[in-house]
Length: 102
Image (cartoon, rainbow, N blue to C red; front, side):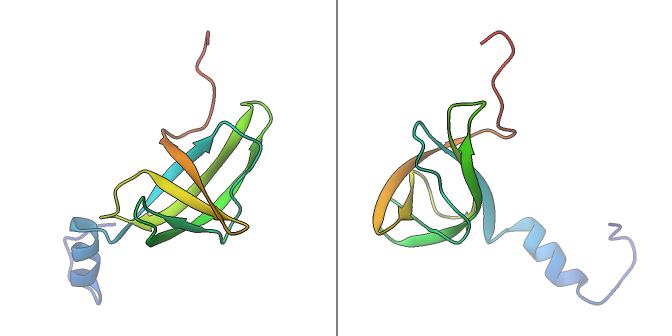
């Protein structure tokens, strides 16, 4: 998208690019207990900071993975509310795959 020209909404888009309110984080857990879309994400203090957008158990990796949309200012670690229990998940790099030779 070119910002050389003036258009409706240009200011709002530029502000959101400079200071994003939310970010996508990649989550993983060495378990079969996978996060699912719509589950809430909490910080260490227990405050809700976001929501899982997608998740599953990855059989080729051997652990549960997911993506969550969280507040940009919310630091990890993150906990996903799975059936009333806040389960800890660690953040990881995307894409989800095993490294060559590992």
